[in-house]
Length: 196
Image (tube, rainbow, N blue to C red):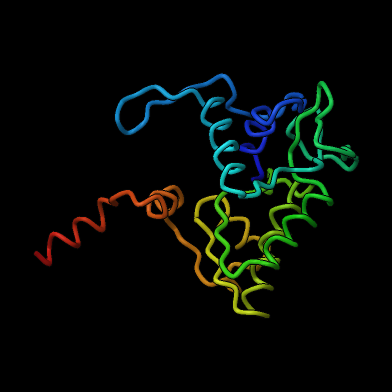
């Protein structure tokens, strides 16, 4: 998990300082049944279920930070998963990049949905571009089934030139996740109805 989503999970995992990093901790949302869900509890439940199923959830080990979401020639890079007070994490650090690249190199299938940082600003593009490269390399060198879930991830892969090297780039963004979750997609349903 990288990007802004990581900071909600780091808070849920307990004990991690996230500084001024974007997160959704303390918020709630309505699920498809109209019930309010607390994001903190959802993240904790996810981590607990993963642990119970012996599934390793990878979270950032280090971060590239700044006090504002602006480019800089001298961002700070943390030595651990804590983000200093007054700073915001804007990309994953080198140790995290290595961890995620290793994970991708051991997969037969990889789905990437969501950039690792604010890739639109060159200071914070290394994480996302490294993940795109790792997926492209895996696809080209060993036949990795690599899927980029559209939206900002697709933009990052296109910007760094690796989108053409992966198996599939969806233009659906969030719809890609809905499909993986098993939700009905209105466009597909309309096509299915035409064949009835």
